[in-house]
Image 1 (cartoon, rainbow over the protein chains, first blue to last red):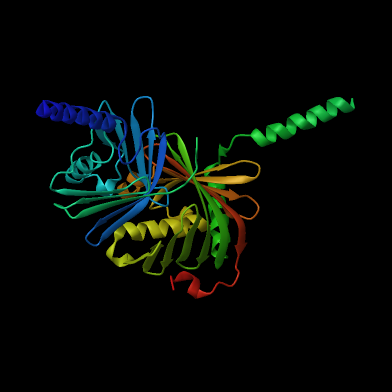
Image 2: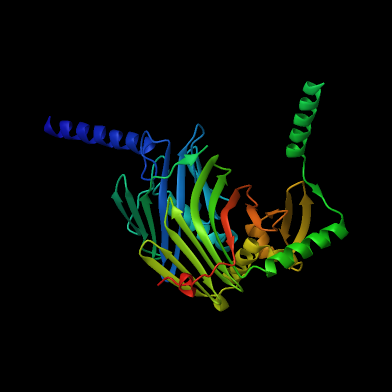
Length: 152
Length: 211
């Protein structure tokens, strides 16, 4: 009886977690329509900074990363559970960069976030701060929530 | 009679304001570019405030930021965002310095062709000097009653992947750049409007360092 109770509890917990993952993910929490982040990417001596805007729409999630000058780094969309990168800036539009970026972003914004596994470390101080480390390629993504009004 | 006159004048005024810009003839184009180039050569220093509006096509959001700019011939530029984030970008000869939060970085332009082109584009855009860089851009000049608009289409592939079109709006009287519109291949646009423009003021060289 006790074992049965434990099994039921575990199944219910798993179901709750799965349900939560479908509607809430680090870059855009449940109930939020829009989130704006100060974005930093570090890899060895290279640092890229900018602004990341993520918005929930009727068809799914869309986001963009631009630098402070407004020059776009890339867009991304999540439709039917699939994350796609779009309009990547030419200097970073390489298949190996796209593959790594897509794989890493899936940890942060997808209906069922990819498990970070052993190759990544995800540190969440929600709602204000996210740090994702890709240990294999030594890439650190930092997101710091900022309050910027964006007009529509 | 008076009413007809007033209505006619109002209609004329409205027509003048909505008159589309039209491309100028080649001879006129050369004259305008020459005038703007001459006016730009008289600018030793430039100081102004700017408002930058980034239109994001994929999100239908607009990101508005504010800051100020200093320029000193031949290639010193301080571009400083103050709101809603603090970010400083300085071109000082062959060096670029960037400061954001507590981070600072310095880049030697000789080691980065991309940054070199970016620096040249920025310095050329704020004064209009880029109009004479015919090897780098296809330049079309449009005019209306109060402004000249120069449409620059990059020739180099690298710059074309960043910008499909760069539009500089000049005040017809002063030949000063009032507005810059950068259009990216994705359809995003960045509109930069300059205000409080002051020319040939004394600017301390220290303004072009991060110290």
